[in-house]
Image 1 (cartoon, rainbow, N blue to C red):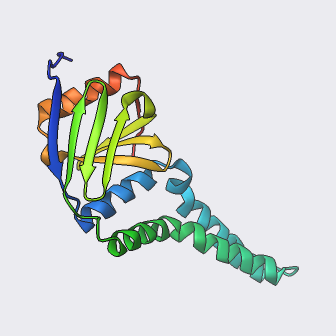
Image 2 (cartoon, rainbow, N blue to C red; image 1 turned 90 degrees about the horizontal axis):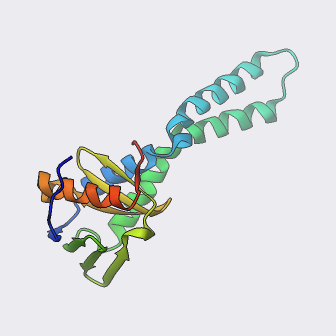
Length: 171
């Protein structure tokens, strides 16, 4: 990988409701347990239904298996729904965000917030077709849509990630 000698990049963006939903869908896809929950849910539902037809069945236990199976089956959709509810109720979502990235830190400014984080505060990143997400904690991530970045900018950001030992997690 050739070394790109940029000192900083700056860009502005706003996130639409659909993009916000897509980023959260990708975020929850990085959780292995959530990714496999539908399969666990189907097994639990089938076990609950099967236990109803057995000669010595326990109705309460069967109902619990079916209810928890439905929860496991639908949990990712519920989490995304809750995230979208937050998006719709907060008027600051969807407003313009200005970002500046240097070798040392990332800065973000928007309506009602200012952010400056050094790269050593981040733990992992995720890349997919619509953008990059960098994680400061397991459930705290920052979004960088690729629609506002060119290939050189993405390479520069990836070199910063590599320099700071950020590992990529697959969505």
